[in-house]
Length: 167
Image 1 (cartoon, rainbow, N blue to C red):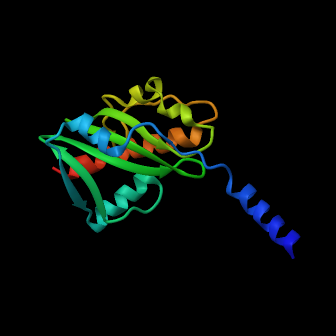
Image 2: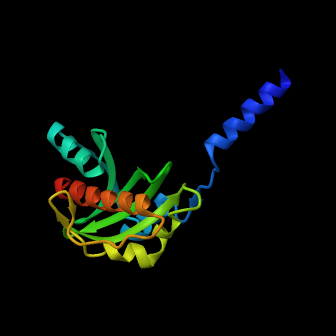
């Protein structure tokens, strides 16, 4: 009985994979850095058609409420999307219909794909707008991080879409 229990626990641990959450910046810190201390938290309620479009952008269903922060015409969106197995938490500063800053805040995959956090990658999003349901410019892939890159592109497009309807 003890051996079976030990084997069951060992198999569970192996199947779960390593836990490797890396926090590079807290969401609160990103919001403060992007918008200053005067940012106001708001909730965007999506209509059925807006929810469907957001779902097409993300490649899966989304809820009908999204929290964001605004100061003047600039908005910040803290978004999550699964890379290969676990969520990637990102911060997006949107102003004038374009991405002004993109940052990986928390990366939970281990260890592949973490390269999406580096400025050499995230700087590609600066100035991108929305073209249909995709970014208006290409973003270079990273070998071994295709799923994380695709998640970043989808979150960038979603942040732009949400900012366009939050006016």
